[in-house]
Image (cartoon, rainbow, N blue to C red):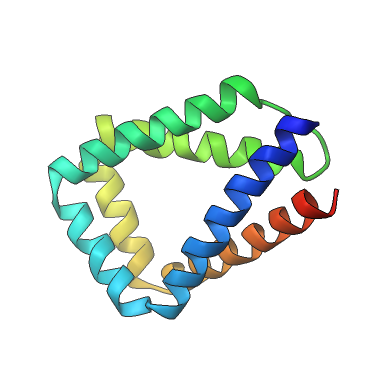
Length: 127
């Protein structure tokens, strides 16, 4: 379980801090996401990074239990799916993300990241 705690600390802190920044700097992040989706070099690079991080998580922590360690696995699979989408179908990924950002999706995503991050921080540092 030591690896799960390590990942919960790192992923939890990352999700919390990014989610908080997205809530606090709402306009700047929405603009940055829009610009990122229009830049093929950044889409490719971010796809490589997301795929690499997702593979690192999944190959070392593919744990499916009815407890918090499954959240780490879900984050890993989300990263893999995002990485593959950005590399192989960047236009479809960009359209999906633009549609999400047009509605309440950005706000929901920001708060989900913030709350999941807080939860992982809590379980990681209270264990």
